[in-house]
Image (cartoon, rainbow, N blue to C red; front, top):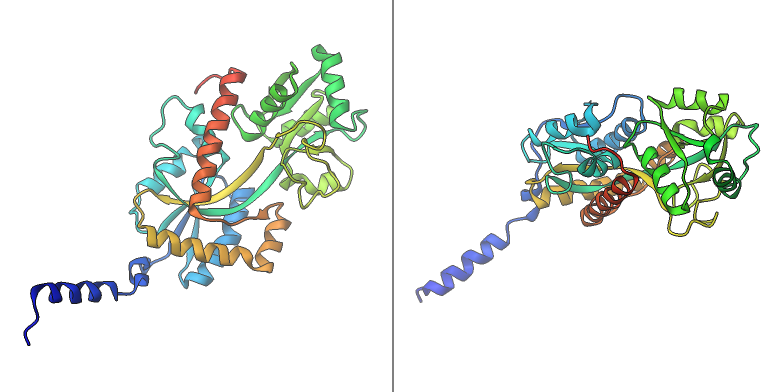
Length: 323
């Protein structure tokens, strides 16, 4: 009996449906570039190299870390978007990308719209630091000092618009205090000023300073994350100190060009999460001060949008000049 036209159409549809979805998630047969918007040796770079090695083993393809520092992540972002959207070029996204949406008057891309979220890699807290001989031993002590002697008190951070700098501004807004924020060119200059007594307190990332905090060269009176830092379990959070809902956590994630096929993103996300679940990878990241955290592309997309809006409000309230 001859097939009717609708039977042929139905069988054709079944044939198409039987094609493995995996074929649509194939990556190009070449090394995968993982662009890092920071110089070699920093937290983002160490995270990328650790996670990149795990990804390489799981994808059975080399993952090459490519450092493209400069202009608050703009150089790296341009390199990513100039590449084919085939999954062979990825980038480490950081807080700086969410901040840049409101910090720069004109960007060659939209960090939320033009990057396809792949997945989180890890997060790390910012510490509120004082000199070891300072009389300030808690956030309450710090608030008392800032309120009683604002003319002779100040807060040190690295450059204007950095996560540390904006965390200090959010602290002032949340606590309802007025204090001068003093930006420095980098961490060494900031710590020198803190130990010399030029600044009352400093906001800086925990990761590279864990050793100095643990040996007593610096005193951490709080961390800005909602939960205590895994590498500083005895240091309270700002929320524990009474600043409800205060939560500033630095993070590193993986993104791709916006037009990257969804199956490709889902495949990389699966392997990324599997790599982050390995105890050896988690331990290696923690040595660098990073707490391994995976998640879905949708969760990362929500985080990036929320962070962009959060820092837009802080930049406006603090009166930070748009660059």
